[in-house]
Length: 189
Image (cartoon, rainbow, N blue to C red):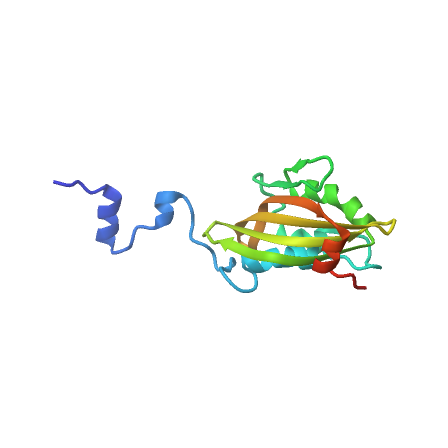
């Protein structure tokens, strides 16, 4: 004879299904976190690189919170952010710390132009989703030097009451030749 747990018996008697959240501790995804289209992790990852980190000559000083703040989780203790392009290879444990790492060097650039070369690819979940994409960046330093990089970016998104927010970031980069970057991200004003 099989004994049914009391919770199942009570749920059956009440005519209500036992919620998955009660078993796992994970709540179903709120409507604020899209699985596809605008506001989804894939679309937001594309915006992250093609809008947030894009800089044209003459743009005002870089304001991380204004450009990218809506994409990051500012209050989570789970935040871990890393980019090996940082010469000191620091791991930020908050969006504010990440902003302090990147604001000065990004402001110093004359321009930063990007092109997505692969992705975004998304593993979709209810409370967390992960996205990856590869991009090329054409960075023009204050001295006019062109630095070309290829990068693979992985972001983990947490579903919040205001939409998806980045809680993990890992970007791995490698420098490419001037000829390569000219072909992938041509010069433009």
